[in-house]
Length: 283
Image 1 (tube, rainbow, N blue to C red):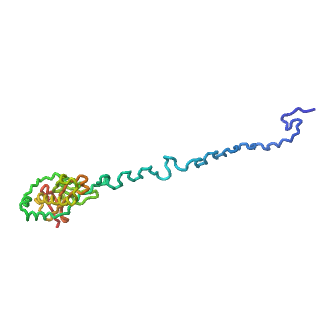
Image 2: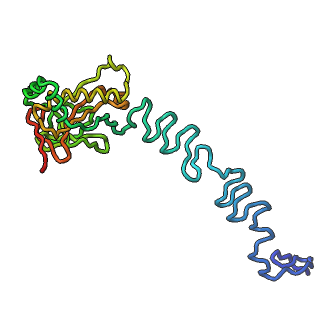
Image 3: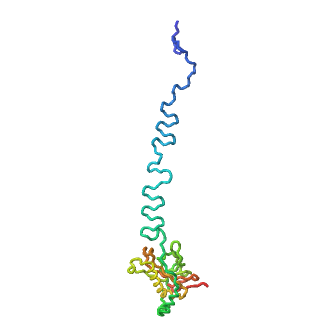
C-alpha cells in the first residue's frame, strides 16, 4: 500500500534525488552577487562615475579662479586702473605739484623772497649828510598812536598776508612756511612797517627776482626814514624786504613788505606803527 505524498517530506514519493543538504548549510549567507553593487556601480562611500573625488575638482573644472572671482594672493588692478597707492592716469604723483604748478596739493605755500638784513642806521647817516629836510621830517613824524593790526595772543601767519603793525617772534619760518605773530607788547624780533603793491601795468609778467629785489629794497629804505626813524633812531636796528618769487607771483602775490628786525643781542617791544616801539640791547 502506497503512502500518501507528504509535501513536507525531504523527497517526494517516487523521487530518489540526492539528499537535501544539512540544515543550516548556506543559510544566512547572501546569494551569489546578493547585496553587491552592479558592474560599474559606485562602491559604498565612493563617488559615482563622472563625479569628482572628495576634495577634488570635477572633470573639466578649471584649477584657476573663475572670471570675476578672487584668486590666490592680493587682487590685481584691472587693465588701465592704477595700482593701490599709485596716482591715477593724468594725476600728479605723491608730493608733486599739480597741473599749473604751485604748491603740492595740501602742502604749505612756499615763502616770498627776502633781501639781506641791512643796518637801518646807514640810511639815517645818508639822510643827515644829503638832506637835512628829510631828517627833520623824520624826526617830526606823524605816528597815529594806534596799531589795528596787533593781536592778543600768538598766531601763525603766512608772509603774503603780513600787514604793517604785525609784530613777529622772529623771521624764522616753521615747517609749514608760517611765521609766528605775537602781541607787540611782548618781546619780539621783527615788525612790519610798510608795504606797497606792484603795478601790473608796469609788470604784466614776472620780470625776474633781481628786478624786484632792487625795487623792494629802494622802497623799504625810503619808508624806513619816514616811518621807523622817528620812533627808533638806534643805529643797531636792521631792516629787510619781502618781494614776490616766481611761485608766489603765479599765485597772485604782488606785494613788497618791509620789516625792521632786532640784532641777535637785542629785541623789540612796542610798535613803530603805534609810536611806542623800542629796541632793547642786552648787555
